[in-house]
Image 1 (tube, one colour):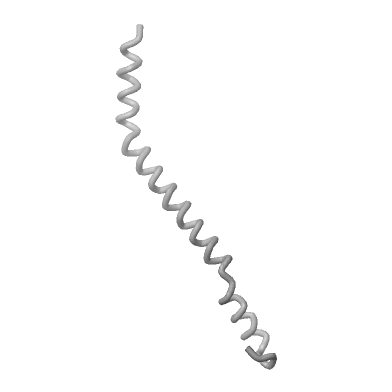
Image 2 (image 1 turned 90 degrees about the vertical axis):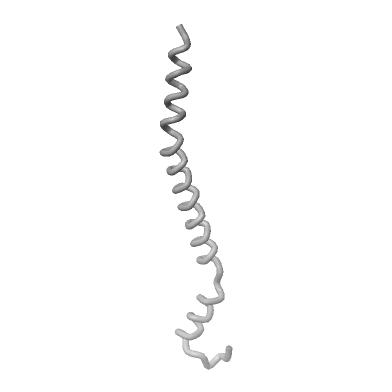
Length: 61
């Protein structure tokens, strides 16, 4: 890039070369995916685990 490039063009070029925003977005998407999977797992297995604890509790005097 030459020194005669406009400030906007230099700014756009610098922004395109910066990968920090992309990495942050990837980490955020990964966190959302893990959270969604955890919610689905707890919702699906919650009743089964609760029933198991209730049966175990009923077995104690």
